[in-house]
Amino acid sequence: MVEPEKPMKKKDQISFDEEDAKRLQAEFNEEARLVREKDGANVALTEEWDDIQAKIDVDYELAQRLQAEEQEE
Figure (tube, rainbow, N blue to C red):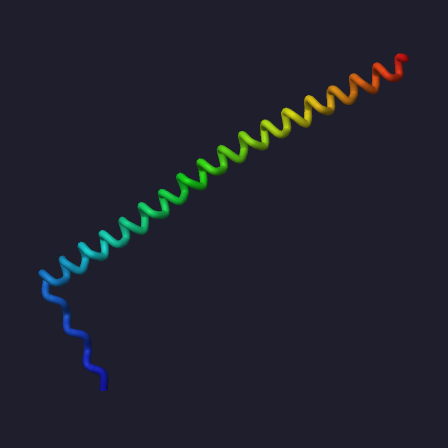
């Protein structure tokens, strides 16, 4: 036969709840930090891709202009 758990004393329960709240807050803070880092990385990556796309566009325009000049000759 299994004996039922003894209820915690109020003082012990408060201490337990405070520790649990601190642990949960720490987990929340860590998750929030990771989200901020990920968002920063996404912004940097987007800017890098925008720069690459701009270079591709310039190269494409140059190639079209050179082809047009060659056809005129």
